[in-house]
Image (tube, rainbow, N blue to C red; front, side, top):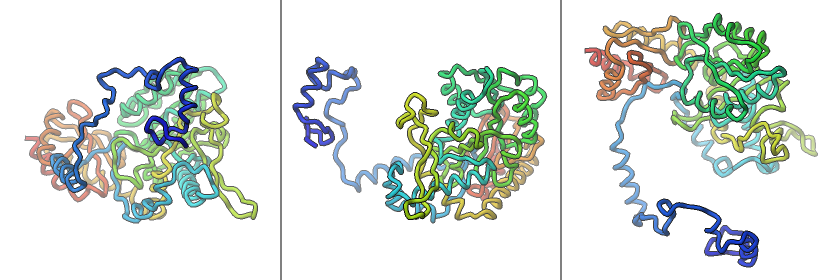
Amino acid sequence: MTQTDGSPFAPHTAEETAAMLAALDVESEADLFDIPETVAFDGNFGIDPRSEQEIRGELSRCFAENNRLTEFMGRGHYSHYVPSIVDHLSDRAEFLTSYTQYQPEITQGFLQALFEYQSMVVELTGLPVANCSMYDAATGLAEAALLADRVRETTGDTILIPEYLRDGKQSVLENYVDGAGLEVESYPMDDGNVDCTTLDELAGDETVMIYAENPTVRGTIEEGLSEVGEIATDAEALFCLGSDLVALSILEKPASVGADVVVGEADVLGMPASYGMGLGIFATSDRYLRQVPGRLVGASEDRNERRAYTLTLQTREQHIRKERATSNICTNQAWVALRAAMHIAMLGANGLVELAEDCVREATALAEQIDTVSGYQAPIHDRYHFREFVVRSERPAQAVTASLEQAGFAIHTIDDHLLQICVTETNADETDGLIGALKEASQ
């Protein structure tokens, strides 16, 4: 490698660079770009040099200005206690420094861990095929819609989603399917669950895919999934179900209610709530094996008949598929998937179920307590709940959340008089304080 123009990263000689510029009829590399002067780098970052100690002190002072709130927030982002062993193991250099496991002869350990992650998703969903992660639940849902459009034999362009869907997830879906000429339409909910009667009326030949969630974004446990599956079958549409790894340990297996694809969040395990970075589930049936986006880790044998793992069915555009690729996703969340698999292994089957059962018990207990406080009704949906629930407040919701913030608590505002509260093992010991703050806020 020859250094060119002061850069150690340009693998071209000065003669090669000159020849390329001449072929393009430009004088310099800068002529290939149109960068406004207002944003162009002038050679000076404007950052005074400081020692490590000075920088750490400045950051500490900056972080100290943050409000230290106890969060009772959910709606797709959940906080569960992550055992310290997950940090210690996943921080090993062979995991942190590994990029994509293109060379199986030197990445067998990581590949096996991803294979185990896939196997865990398969066991929890009941579907036989799972990839080794997506960016997040939103991209998983969008990829499911594109898969449905590719495999559905009859014409149609409509994706049906519940009216209660997180705005960000719906936005990602709409952006994804716009290029495929698909339309996203919503169907109504009935007391927090799918209004199956209306959904049946809406679904028809034009329906490509029906999406439902369990638990829903409002924390209700969906009771009509089998009926939703039957409606999708009658309409010859794919049935996509959204969930998460903890909830799947005690809820009906998606395969048993007719789900063709399962998407959702896996970062509920192995990672703290990040409100941005995620880890997406994608599982489906054998018939769609070659339509799965992203990557799958497969198990095979080496020349000595020993079990070996390798990336297989990489249907992305970078490889031989090119324009026939099933997905534009060029990477995955391998390290985060590794952490999720470690967390599941640490909990074990019984521990995972116990965690999920706590999510039901704690939500039920907190809702019952709030319901006894004057000025509140909780939960507003007469359903079983998982982690979270919606509360009706006599006072405007914004006024209540502002009062709670002053008291050191953060919850969701979802309507003029509707609040949403999420409880897990990481904040369950703060519920008494929350109840007290709610009483003060109702005055």
